[in-house]
Length: 570
Image (tube, rainbow, N blue to C red):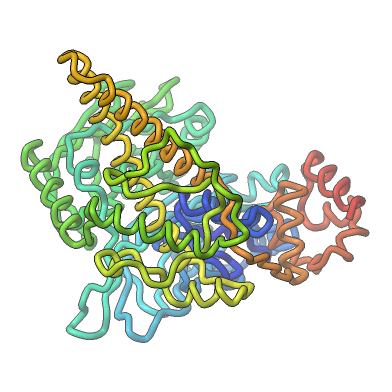
């Protein structure tokens, strides 16, 4: 079997933590060669609690699948999502005598930390070729294997397409909603919290079925299911055009995909409308992770009525609470979040800036260009407390003032590694340090801008009162000084930090193949396929042929040309 993984929560190499966009930007300025490839990887990643995996079934594996016997199982290679090991199990001809002809698909959790009791996830299965899909919220323990409903995809559906499809692709998406520990009878260790305002406000979801999917739905057999995108990280729709429990009865279900942090159950007023057939149905039901899906009932719309539609859109009106209550909930959440974070006063910023400047000058020493003495610049910058030279930012200082030490000190491990010119730094700690320095920079910029506005107001007042022009000139010089400082600080965000770290990381053969496919060929989706077929180093790829690509199931002419052209240049 062939597999390709695109993790969102962790790098497949396990060597990097996700950096924020601002940290990535500044780190790129530190050393573009070091961080350019890492940046491209980081952009592909999402948060720790989400993951995606694609199981590519090539022509060689597809052939035995479509001729499989009942209860015959096929297993994907193990893969990692959210730092947990998973595996996909497929029974192309059903896993019980009563499900013969059903292509059953399961996701099994292979490993889980021993301290964890269970995880609750929102899982989505889709098949690109048949458009089949399914989303559900499920509780997993180690060894749990859960799939989509029987006949959500049929074996005959695949057989009907085998003459024109050369491969089959299943995509698995997960979002970890909750982690419970063994201790204290299931203490909650982690919860995914949906934005309360977006989740609870009165909203209307609209799923416009495109022409290709509409055509596919009109060909649906009994129990074949489809799934919509997820809206506001909280809702999606499941649709069974030819029925799920009653054949020919068009079924729509509203599926919960997440909850706000302040609740574990919500009472929802919801109404589903299909204007193309003038049908609507509304209900009031409770949603939680144990009862996460409700349907609009039987006998609302028939499959035959649906097939007459040239266009089709499903709209869902959702109301959870009154607007004022939602605003109160959001404001309290902001307040609690703010109270839990350390605050930084302007006086601390000025003190840190003055001290940091002295550290900069000591560090730069004879390496710094001499600053041009500007006689027009006021000697006393007591309002600002900072004058920055136009030079590269030095490594982080080791002992900031006590007033900011608790929130702005540099992690010792970073400092030691920087001073010792070691090759590898912990990205998580770098991210934390960079974010703190950027926060100081932003606060100083804000303070400087306020002081400029204040001085401009003073100039207007002095001018209107016909006072001594000397005061006006002094204020204008001070404004010029502050503006120069603003310019220098802004430059720093785009300057190269003078950190002596070349980060010369040697790539192994497989990593070189992955980099080649990503950066040169621009077809990173074939990485696992190349590895599975033994093309695990660039030397073997140099001699790859069109026949090899056909055997691997890569039959798109454009893709073949790109691979062969770049292989010749290795």
